[in-house]
Amino acid sequence: MGDGPPDAPQRRHRSIESGKEARKHLAALEALIAKAPAVSVPGRRRARDELTRVVEEANRAIARVNAEAPTVRQHRRPLDRAVEAARLEEAFERDSGR
Image (cartoon, rainbow, N blue to C red; front, side, top):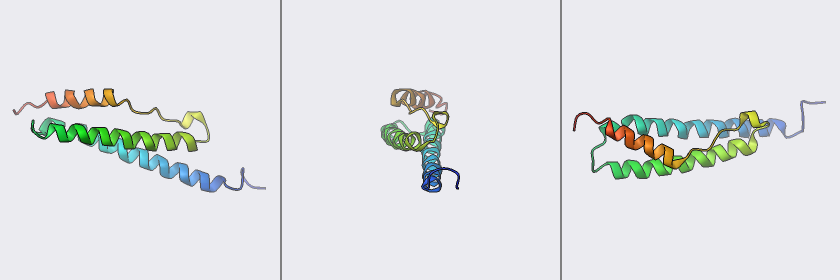
């Protein structure tokens, strides 16, 4: 017999792809925060909107990871938009050139 249910390989593949998707969105969030000190004051609204979008996309991907994960040890904690927004605002304040 095989290593689990017949659909186990497909589920593993979906779980791996969902994990990649979540990591992509988490990387986009970190890149946005890293660039924040250089964002102009007028550009900050756009950055805030982008943060909201990225957090929502990341949380959707994280929900898929959690639904597909074979064990709770592989679950990820959803992002808190308020916490991430505060990180972005702190990064704006690191703007030393303006």
